[in-house]
Image (cartoon, rainbow, N blue to C red):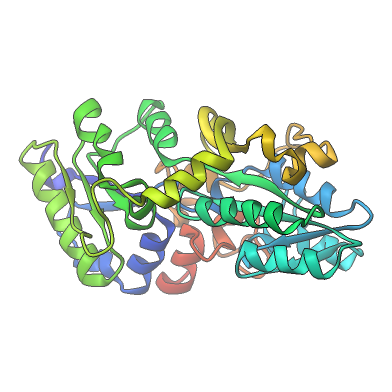
Length: 341
């Protein structure tokens, strides 16, 4: 592959936002394109799952606790979000940590507190710790609706998808701090694609992109960890142990990629008391109707935010069609805020 035609993918929404905020794309050599991948946990949550969240929020006595990003993400129907449901009477509690939701549940034992556990392996340990804490402290009114995803199965599905055209991966430092840099070795060894684990400062990203381009140009499929100050080869053993204790891999649905085997994290049966899906019989039904939102294409590298005809006109941060425009890690939000309409 000629160096003038390189397509490299960052697999982290924090990278996406940092690249846009720093104007780093303007510093890349001509022909080297960095495109966004499925690294925004809110963005990869499909509309039918958001619909299930919205229905759960209307159950009498239920308080939905969530990170702020999810409050304005629409489901299948435009404008139907947790923010709208709150206006209709649903109780929605914005928290900074799942532990905040456990504390709130203990302070309000008459309410059922459901935490929306969105994220990848980065946030999974904290969610696991909250479930263990709730169990230990007797917070029987605390449960989790697990929206947690695993990165490796998604990347495998992406690489196997029709039209995939990427010559290297900028790997997520946050995820790698938990799973270890070696968790991305499958990219060079099985798919012949170079991979570089990167930090989030401008110098981290520029250095990693340069090294990734050098590897791709020379045809060297290798894995490098350029975030050694935070990422070890084997990851965080205690965090991985917590994930393994509380969760087990399961088939899950991704926006833009469909259903992927072992790509989600379901709560183990021994913690059924704290599993909102079991407690409330949460069912995910097919999405209602078609949406003009192209977020699924953006997060799989098939299109750029500005190529969506809705970008900046019909779809804005104030009135988003989909999560890519409202999430703090969304590619469309990054492009709108830092690169202009």
